[in-house]
Amino acid sequence: MSAWAPAAARSASRRAARDPIAVAVAVGFYAIVATVISTLWRTAATAHGGQVAGYTGVQLTWYLYFAEAAVTALQQRQIEMTGDDIVSGAIAVEMLRPVSVVGLRLATEFGRCLPRLAACTAIGLTLAWITSGPPVEVAALLLALPSLLLAVACNLAAQHAFAGAAFWVRDARSAWFLYQKLVFLLGAMLIPAEALPGWLHSAALALPFLAMAYVPARLAAGHLEPQLLLLQMGWLVVLGAAAVAVFAAGERRLQVVGG
Image 1 (cartoon, rainbow, N blue to C red):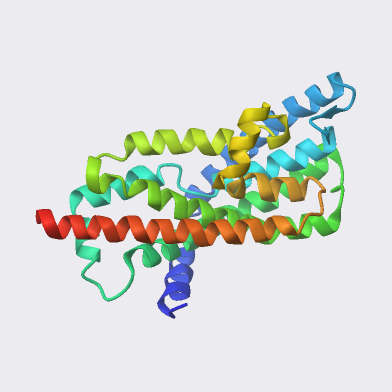
Image 2: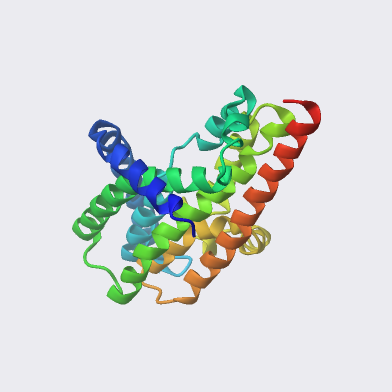
């Protein structure tokens, strides 16, 4: 990887860390939502013989805190914001630089997410331990930590691929709305993938959204399945390539229409 990518990530991370109010707001929102949802799932597990879709109440607690952390760390309207940059011409200006627009943006946004991800993870670990006890499998929990980083990277790559629709439709709001719902449902952020109906579960397995929330959550829930990280790495390559291809096609369109 070119030297500018990690440098851009570090610079963005430092800038984000210097805005503790924004980080605190994101963490506060995360703590409230994750605690409420995990409490509801623990209650459901208790009412259904101690398990839901093969997860105990303790496992569901760890699952939800990590699933929420993986998504809350990102800018929630990233697709819309990137689409606005495309429509306004800011992207066209960036394309004049001798570096990859997508690569630079992904590195910058990844760095910007790190302070929020670190804070949410620390709070999530604490709250999950307090509300339901220690992790079920420490080795699996340790794998969940790098998995969170891969989840954020996959999510950012997919968001830029979706945002590229603005090169053609000039409005990324609908793409953002659709994408958010896909991550919530097919990414298994609010409900374990095993609890999805058969046809929906099959669809989720064939799509990349599980790499963005489900994988770190399942690992944190105590399932020692290191192959899930390989799944994330594979999807990261595919999604990164898709984002690059979409922006390359968008650049060609700008050159043709003079945008």
